[in-house]
Length: 162
Image (cartoon, rainbow, N blue to C red; front, side):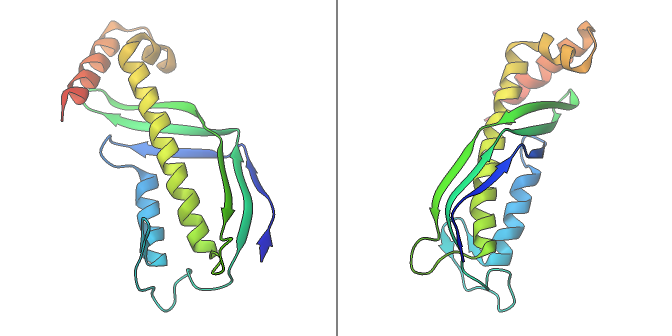
């Protein structure tokens, strides 16, 4: 099956992290287990996986206008959230080789890139909070100096860890 163009506009993605793990990585690990692949290495697929089935060719795959709802549990601060833009993701020539690509493999490729971009965007948001703790209180709708001090200490402690 040939798909000339696939456009996903304005998706809203929840990215939950404790600064060590995130929900999208866990979902990606589940997809990789199901398809029998990890990263770029192909393992022996399970006989009844979603990885088997019709082969696809996707010439143009675009995700644009998305938002990432970041929910982070920060040391000494607790849970904080922010919404940041998802950078445009544009993939081309997926499955154009003779073997094509399965729907599960396509899902894995797209999810891997979404997870990477969401992690970068979440990291930038946390860095911005570290540089400008007052932004955190604006996002929370409060101006308490105690919250600023806790956020600054927690983020600084975390960023000093190797």
